Structures are given as structure tokens and as C-alpha cells.
Length: 264
Image 1 (cartoon, one colour):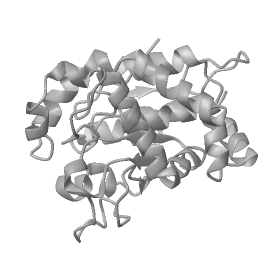
Image 2 (cartoon, rainbow, N blue to C red):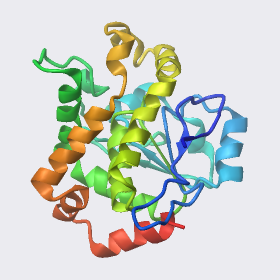
Image 3 (tube, helix red, strand yellow):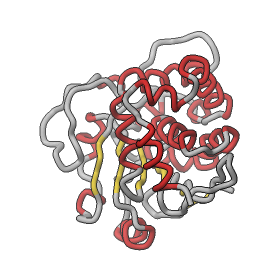
Image 4 (cartoon, rainbow, N blue to C red):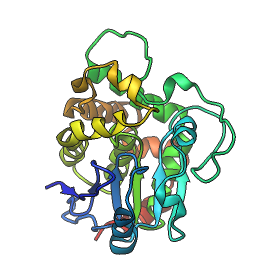
């Protein structure tokens, strides 16, 4: 069952706690959350996330351009929280919300994973899979670092919609934690339940509005087949997500630390 967290300033927030593992265990509540953009959090939202749930780390997967364009978010002013800006695009700079005072080096045509991409043959799911694989190829450092941050304490992972970039990083983490594939896929697809609300919020931002208005809303919907295909490719090429991670510096100690932090 999806554990939605209802906030005023974000609409695609859920807790991975309660998901079961293949060995009969379960993930701990309040240790790993996923979300859409956190720029609009209210003081009450911040209090709930930080004081009541206990979030201590924000894993921000947005591009440098997004961070600069959107400006400092409410959680950057919370001393109990550490912001980790880990872009999944190949770009220069390492800006956080707090440090975003100089122009980054970034392809401005790639603020979002679907922006200004060339026409491609094949279904939308295949195009999305290609973008997901590109995240891994372009920024394996960010992916590995994101999972290591999760082991440091209660974390919330977000991008813009909380669907593509967040979906990839969360899927890899859940696989390492031993969550069954069908549960990983179901969690990815759950964003579809909030898609209209997510797109509505993003259209209120000049950073995203023009691009979102250029495509039908349903073209942004996450489909189970997309995540299934992505994970199958990792199986075929690397022996699974864990094999890919090991190829990029992840260790058995990293796996043990993540499981100790997030599994009950």
C-alpha cells in the first residue's frame, strides 16, 4: 500500500517505509521519502518533515539550471537539514540552493529529461528508458553518492516531478534493499495517481511551464513497462542494479550500511 504524505507545498510525497523485502523483512518508516519539487513547502510542511518525521538529508537531483532558476528552497534555511545537490545531467558546477549565485555550465535544453528531445521512433516508454540509462551513463557519481547519503540518516529524494530522476534513484536503492521487483515497479507507477496535481504545480513555475504546455499531459504518465524495461536492461548488461553500482565504486560495505539504516 502506498504511504502518501499529504503536504500543502508538494503533492507527490511518499514514504518507502513498509515496503517488504524478499527475505521477509520490511523497510523502516520515515527513513526514505521521495517527492516532487520542494520549493513550495510551507512552514507547516517543513515542521512535519523535519521535526515530526525526522528528515535530515535532502537529495536534490535537479540540474544546476533548475536550482539557479528556482532559487533557495525552504529546507535550505533549516539548520537540521543537509542539502545534497546531485544532478543527473552531464554539466559543470556543483551548486546547491545556498550556493547558486553564479551561472552554471549546463545545456539549457535539458532542464527536464523530456525537454527538446529529437523525434524518436518507438513508444514513449522506450524513449524514457533511454533517458534513464543516460542518467546512469552521464552521472554515475551522483547516483552512487545519492545511495550513500541515504545510509547517513532519514532522507528525502526529489527532482521536479518526482517521477523520472527520482524514480531511477529510488528504484536502484529499493533493489539494493531487497524489495521485490513488482513492488519497485508499482512504486514507480504510483506517481501516475498524482500526475495532474504534479503538472499543475510545475505549470505555476516559469522554469517548467512552457515545456509542459507543449506536450499532452498523459505523455508524462509513468508506466510500469518503462521501469520493468529499465531494470531488465540492467540485469542483462550488469547482472542487475547492484552489479552496475559495483562497477562504479559501490562496495559490499555500502550495501551493508544502506540495509542497516533502512531495513527494520
